[in-house]
Each structure stands twice: as C-alpha cells, then as structure tokens.
Image 1: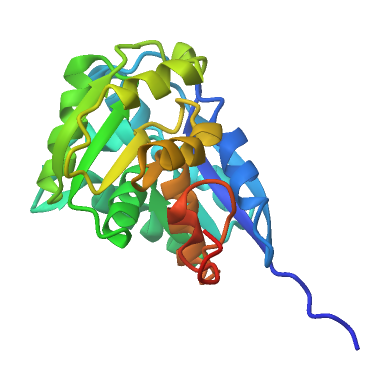
Image 2: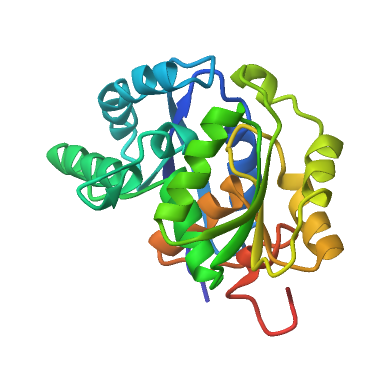
Length: 260
C-alpha cells in the first residue's frame, strides 16, 4: 500500500535587507516537522539602521516584495520584521500588524492567491495568547526609544510587561551577531516574579533559536522568541500540528502528553 504523500508548503518571507537570521531559524524550525515539508522564498526591503525613519521607509517597500513572493505561488507569508510594525502603533483600534496582514491578504487575492498571512508582530501576540500569558518579560536588541515602542505596543494589546531589557544595538547587521551569552545574561537579569512567559528575543534578527529550550529549562517558565512565535502561527494557519522538538513548550502544544 502506497504511503500518503507528505504535504509541501511554500513559505514567502518578507524581510529587511540586513536580516540574516530569519532565513536560517525558520527553515531550521519547520524542518523539524514530521508531517510536512517546506520551502522558503524571500523578498527584501532595504533597511540597515533600526530607527523610526528607516522602518517607515522599509514598510513603504511592502507592495513590491509581496508581488515578488506572489510570483512563487506561496501558500503562506511571514512579514518578518516585528519592530517595523510595532513602531507604527495602533490606529482605528487595531494594531499595525492587523492593518498590514489584511493589506497583504488583499494584495495576494488580487493575484489570485489565497495564502495565509501573518507578521512577526502579529505572531508574537497570537503565540502569547495561545500560551495564556498576560504578564510577560522581554529581551530586545533595540535602542531604548525603539524598545519602549515595542513595550507600549504589547501593553496596548492587553499584556502587562513586567520587566524588559534593551541591548541598545541600532545597527541591524550587528543585531544578527549578538552573542547568545549576552542574550541569556539579559534574561537572567530580569525580575520574572509572576511572569507567565519570557520573550527571549523580540526580534527575528537577534539569534536565539539555540537558547529557547535552554532558557525554558533553566528559568522554569514558557520561553519563546519572535522566530518560534512565527513558526507556531504559520503551522496553525496551515492547519498543521504544532509539534517541533527542542524549541520550547510553545512548539510542543500538540505533542502527546509528556513529550514536551
């Protein structure tokens, strides 16, 4: 008897031009899935310094990037720059991630594609909600004024940010080179009293994939990152089980009891 074919999904990534991490961590994560295979198709928006001005200029390139990945016939999209959306705040009672995700859905529909769409910003909100987390702690690479925008955005989404650390790195290329020991050191310095979850990297450019399970085991609470939240939301949007080993409890939510 022939075994059923394993489904394959094409994932479109819209990333800042200086980002080198999401195209490493996302394939590494989804490559652990036992029931599907994935390919990744990226388009890049020019951005080097994480400043409000460059983030706005980067977001203005969204239309071109979505058209480019649409040509690949993608099944799902991750708009992979968390701070680019959170820095824009909320309008009409909705976060910028909601506005952008709907705009991308509409643009793809005009091309005849019914792809699932999420953003790193929206994925983090979705993942924290799925964990039942209301009181959270954050580690971010950003300069303090930008980090404060992220804190404000998450609080406007209904979360209480109990404590946070900003590593004060403005050059996005340098963010991709931040050492794991520095990230873990920042996490260990947080006051996690009463926290429901720790976001170890609120940025898809700051490497953290190898640290998530280690931090969760050490600190004794759910630990996630922008990357693991993105993988979680992509899997859910594609109606695939969330069961990826070695990257924290968020990505074992559909695993058998005791397997996390």
